[in-house]
Image: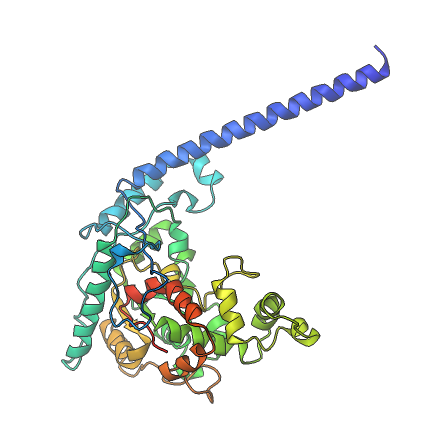
Length: 411
């Protein structure tokens, strides 16, 4: 056998060995995936589903009440009503965790096996033992109506397809305050900066909400998020803490985000979002605009938002609340609204036993000289858009409008 034949033989042997190795690797991964799916199936022993909802393109824009969802085809997150069995779910999940082998725990990323798990939207009574006077009767009545509305909405619109969602993702926007046992889901442009200030004071991290800067609120890393806890810590807090969410009219929130991020100098949103938006949606853009990303127009921003092939991804400031806080999967105890922020916030602080001197701050976090984004301001921005674009925006936030019983805007 000459040298060339030896070389060819060695090469063929090596290729054969590589192919065998790849086959074994695929087989091992398949076995591992099958094992994980069996474990998930033990957890998901109910038919968790996704209904389909939507808004017909020709639907009336100025609708005063949410339409009958059964007529539409737009996907939303749904869930089966568990009749208050959230605690039992936590026990089952914890038991399954204890059954995991060491090899499974080491080979999988933290909580990755929990894909498909979420909490049932059981409607628990609010603990009102810390409310000290009777002046909150009207606010409490409004709160109960909001809770019941959301609960009935989520209960009614079930589906038959299994929903697969990581538990970690469900709680990734939720901030934790352990002293007063509060969980707060952050909805940007709905008072979130001041709510974080309140949480910092409640947690003893600051003496006053007035002494906390914008950078400390958003970049200081003073508050923990729920996904930073281990599995037991997550379940314990979800089942025992008061869970709050504060929302805002979707169109007002959208316009507020645009004004904040694109009408003022911004070292992140202009070069990251602005440049990409101008490049794709502005014809004959000048070199300066392409270089800086400044001066994005509202119509260009809407084109980006509605584009299924966006040049840059979504951002939490205009992401739907249904995808930030999963209101049909996590049973929020308190639903506040930006439109009634002051009275809702003061009542919530009473519920959790906050110090009497702590009040929700009224100051505007940034651009304090600007007019607040109101319904009239929104109308002025919407005039820049076509009727079809306005309808598509409504379609985009359709689920948020329905979940929180907001009235569709008029132009």
